[in-house]
Amino acid sequence: MRNLRKHWMVTADRDGEALPTTVVAKWRWYKKGARRDRLRYGVVEVVALTGSAAIPVAAAAHLDSVVIAALGAVVLVATGIRTTFGMHQNWVEHSQIGYAIEREAALFLHSAPPYEGEDAVRVLVARVETLAEEGGQQWARRRITFERDQTDERARNTAVK
Picture 1: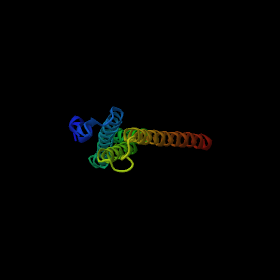
Picture 2 (picture 1 turned 120 degrees about the horizontal axis):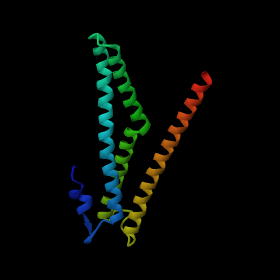
Picture 3 (picture 1 turned 90 degrees about the vertical axis):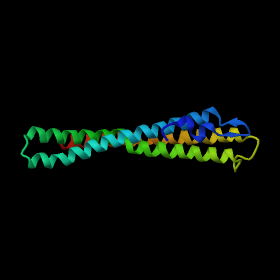
Picture 4 (picture 1 turned 120 degrees about the vertical axis):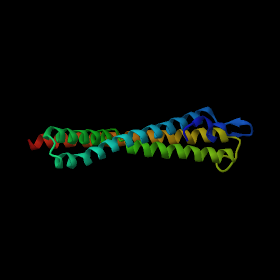
């Protein structure tokens, strides 16, 4: 699915009318986001796994402690980036919303409920906007929870000292 311009979401029509521009734009945004987040997550995971695997090898090879410490630092940073930016969760959420938009579009294109009436376009746009809004709220809740957890962790660490 490298080329979104040739996907059925872009080329499909219902009674000679293409899918609403806003629906296609939202779908593209989520598909591109899922692709981007999958790549970022994969890169960070490969760095963390490779660095983790290299630590015992470096120790067994009696490499300088600075090299071993640097490998540990790379793993720590990669893991921190993955956790802080929620790359895996973003990938999953963007993928789910993209597929949900495709499902709504497929139902619309075939005049399946709830798209059998005269207001089908309005219903489609409203349902896709709801999917996007719920996705945004889910992301915001996740970020707020993460930031609250980080603040709590800092407070516990400060209290221990």
